Every structure is written in structure tokens, then in C-alpha cells.
Length: 79
Image (cartoon, rainbow, N blue to C red):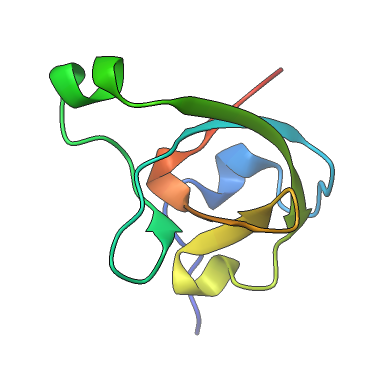
């Protein structure tokens, strides 16, 4: 049985075009990671975009704006 990745219920899985905010903090695989603390969160740029692809959700990231690979823990969902 495959388990959902953390926070997948909060993403509204299946909601392509959901507006999200995320930190522009790439790792060596070019996946944008969450900031490690408050200081880093305040000093890095944040991006607002739409979810465009959820096919990699089981790998721990999704695609936003057709080019950003964003880690699940880096997403802030706009309501």
C-alpha cells in the first residue's frame, strides 16, 4: 500500500492551477527546498505561481509554472 507524501492532503491533490507561494532555494537537483530557518526565509526570494503538474507528488515535489520543481514542504497554499 502506497502512502501519500506529507502535506499532500493540504495541497488539494488534483487541483491543477492552485496558487502557491514557495522559497527560491534550489538544491543540487534543482528542486526548490524550504528555508532552513527564519533568517534564511527572510533573506531569500519567494515566488508566487500556480501548480501545473502533480505527477511527481509521490517523489516529494511538484511542478509549478511549468519550470519550478518545488519540494512539498516548501509550498504555502493560497486560499
